Length: 98
Image 1: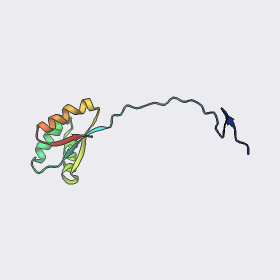
Image 2: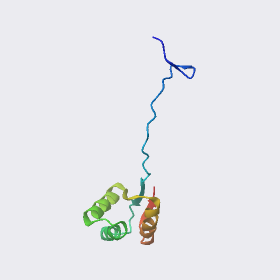
Image 3: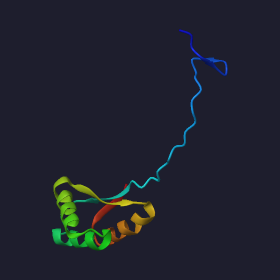
């Protein structure tokens, strides 16, 4: 079997050019860490007020933080997450952006 030749290189075939849709990286997230200081109710209240969680979401995240040690509580652009993370820190929670 004879290989096609393109631009003098054996075995290279011409390929069709295609457009590729590039998605914006929106995978930044606030990680909330467990601590031995804040109560469940306080963490739930903070998640509702700062991260705009509903009650169920805030409770589930709080339980995950307690039992797993951490949980990502908000995803989005760095511009959106930075003030939210700073507010969680100001309220005495342990959080960082990844």
